[in-house]
Image (cartoon, rainbow, N blue to C red):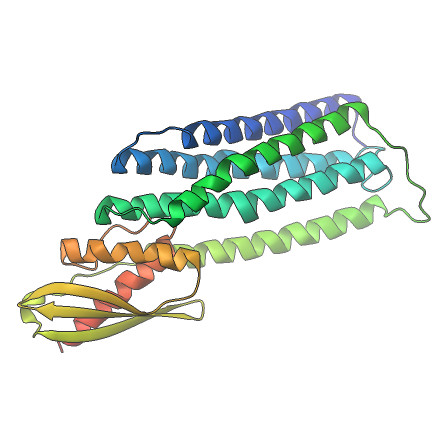
Length: 294
């Protein structure tokens, strides 16, 4: 059991994480409401939102869950003994769903589409759909956290009747196992993604390529990405996607194709928010040109 001083510090840390997360949500809302931005300004605004989400929101949420779990397990409140504690975990899971299933994909889509528009000059109509999700989900999230704070202060509902309460040792074992497995998969996934995000893209010499259509492919996580490049008079005149995975992120990544044409090279900046797929498409273009020089 935690001593009184330790419990107080834990509550302070928990409150700081909650305040930081709420501040991050309000910041995202404020930036998303800025109007009259040109293409570059729109990307900067969305990139700022993207960074706030992936730092402030992400780490604050993990901090809230971790401190809440410690407080539940190492105090007399328990993890499932009281209805108000269970209510808090239900609210936390609801917030988790809203953040990573609704808010996160919308933010990724906004930054990816605004990044692609910097080159193409055309903003995907789906941008307005993604942007339209931001305000409603933030309002709902703020309402959820207000409810959670209210539950914490007033502690409504009593202790529930139960025949069996999980022992602290059992809870710690199950939680520790879940954390270790989650961290393990997260680390493996991170390094796997980084290997693709940081892979080198070369620029074959177009002067040695005859006119024609050439295909190249790259693979990642069981998905195949196939591009066709068209070379005429030692210049890239067209790049088309032949095969891509069926997901919004894959579609966002196709914004890298105009950059390949503009720079006459597969080695260009990836689309923010769809970096891995962008890299795969760039690699497929590289392989197509390298195959054409043989």
